[in-house]
Length: 542
Image (cartoon, rainbow, N blue to C red; front, side, top):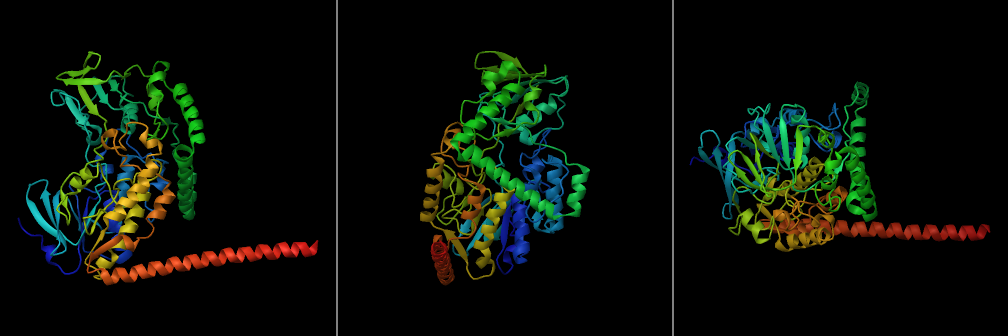
């Protein structure tokens, strides 16, 4: 295999895997914070955008309001409260152009493996051209995985999956060449993607749809709206309103966390309200099936995109019998009924507990082997993994909040990563690695919270295999996520060529803590004396 020429260049080099939202934000941050340009983003597809490039199913859109689903550095005067797939994809393409990222991106290049070499303090990375299948070796001092958890579509484990003779695809890989008109279409799954595209494809009365459901979801009334020309004009005249709008959405989502996850009383009240909404909007024949029996927040909450109203259409039916087998011309249900179908669409989510290719660290183990050893994905602050020097994850384990914007959490993680890699980029340190003890302590803290939360009360994608350890949910408000990742704790890191630098940083960290405690103490003492003087003055007046 030929060696990538860049690997011989002097100075540290960064490789980012994936040109989705996380990878692009990382590249932007390297340029904005450090003016750093020796980085390459490897992207397996032919354009940027990640999940917003790939998910082209009808009705695909964000479920977080757009002022908070944008980068904090690049707010936009959006035309809708919830952007369409096309608009969001265009947003990320425009940012890649604005910040000059395209020269840093190698398209149609799949990373197939990476391995840390302690002697050279480099990752050896193998990539494959997805068009020619030619393999290339490159190296990097720092490796950042930005593939996220919405990378590998998960197909339901149903016998006979390959037996079906009709058109079959996953909603995350929507096949636009398949014409649904006049067809009997089976949809397996009733999660967030299905509730977005089913109302769209069922608008055509010539498309007969049978949706196979397993578990109901809590469905929240839609808050989507098109912004008026007047509003957009005002926002263009007064740009600070975009920032104010962003803060408003952030605070509203934090309040939502308090209502769903933070308070049993409020959760019970919301449960009653949502039950009324579902039974008021959906056909009566589905009421017993559509209202979940599990606690609100245990599974992902779904915002209604006209799904419940669409269930009144005569060409759309729900089947709750369970799929037993897929056969040549359709499905055999667990009740023994044979249902003929022309098209089969899987809306069954992603493999969120699996890392798709081998990355070996200093111990010789791969990321996936480490995950399996820990009974599920595990990382320090969702970002660093012990045994993997200079390797970082964006949207890693236990970083999905369930209520707020992933763009926000990505930015927080990337800000944290930039602080950790800064001494490496400045050639003060060769490598840094988080300790096993710090990783275990952090995970004990979050899982002690998770074990008491609603996330353990049902089968969901937040958990390994649906029922195991909760590895995809963060057990607190978004503010807490920011607080925990605001600054690195240098006592939790060690590294090669890092002893003196770490000693200096730990001393600074200790001094900051002492100064904070002194300031807090002075404030408390001052408050005490102020109170005492005011009490004494009041007594004298009396």
